[in-house]
Image (tube, rainbow, N blue to C red; front, side, top):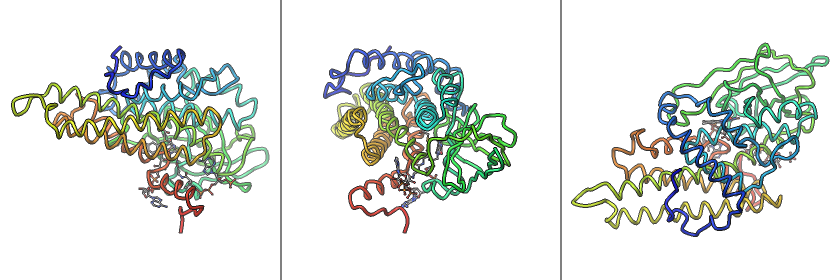
Length: 390
Ligand code: TGC
Ligand code: FAD
């Protein structure tokens, strides 16, 4: 296993970790280094998620690890954050798979599902035997999911679902889709199983980002669902948005890992690359950029450390989570872009990791609420005025 350079943790934050957190972190790091990195370049170039990793990720407890009961591990928030950091040190697509499976599929079933739904789905999803996806975004309703068109209408004991979801992570791989639809009672969540007549998926191709991730469209054409497919515990858009808090938290940690990986690669590169008669690392312009980036990743880690403590104490508000998602995605993208430049032409080659992270981070700053939406959420918290729509 490769140990990251000590200066990357200049504030010695790792000294605060418990033995359990250290073990979790080193286990996921070893998995990424040994089992994932060798697959990434080709999976990304080819445009597929390496499915062979799913069961391994389940065995490592990477899906829904903070959830309790139903034989789930109930780990702390910092341990979970460290897992996401280490996964995204590998690739954002890997962390995305875990964020969706745990935060957007297991979490709503755990929080809003019936006993029958929990007993049936939580363990298979935790182990990776089953895969889930989360369908909120539609072709014409991304930042404003409350405008969704997908509709479910009661028909006797059943529901009839019609509509389309777009940009859905794991959509084609999934055995179960958590789908949000408008009903006469308000927005409600449904569990739609693969193979249900009228439910089809199509893979979205030609992406320049998150290429080692399955991104799909979901189509519902008169899909008949039993009443038992409904998440009974809740009605309203707030339920769907509550799931986003879980995934946004994991992103805030995860992107710190992508930034650290870029910074480590770039620092090593400028140490070895000779130009104008010596290593690039001896130039002040290069050192200033390295210093700026070390400041960025250190502040990013401090933010999520504090957020983990707040979340663990059940005190994390949506605005706090927005702040960390917004800040850390912007920081990681800045770091990745600077590192890409420090690598010169090699920065655009998939023989190096930085260019792949940079492309991935363009998705990560967009999904789970764009940078601008998180500005507006913070603006709302500061002023009391919601400025999402005029
Ligand atoms: P608004 O009226 O503000 O809120 C409706 C109800 O929801 C409550 N609420 C929340 N509850 C829990 N957590 C949150 N984060 C919440 N945000 C809002 C709110 O209190 C209200 O409750 P109630 O009881 O009063 O009804 O709703 P709005 O329609 O004005 O929208 C607000 C806005 C723009 C912030 C929201 O729509 C938003 O967050 N938009 C961004 C959409 C987004 O993030 N989509 C993500 C899709 S999933 C995805 O991208 C997965 S990527 C894969 C991966 O994670 O790796
Ligand atoms: P739009 O909402 O059309 O926004 C376009 C631009 O306008 C953005 O810059 C935005 O910030 C800006 N904008 C919008 N509204 C305002 C405003 N009020 N004020 C100022 N600026 C504004 N969704 C799911 O449901 N499930 C998934 O699993 C999922 N996975 C994804 C995976 C990938 C790789 C990607 C790229 C997206 C995924 N999404 C998923 C969708 C994602 O959540 C949306 O792309 C995101 O919410 C933004 O919506 P949009 O793309 O429609 O952009």
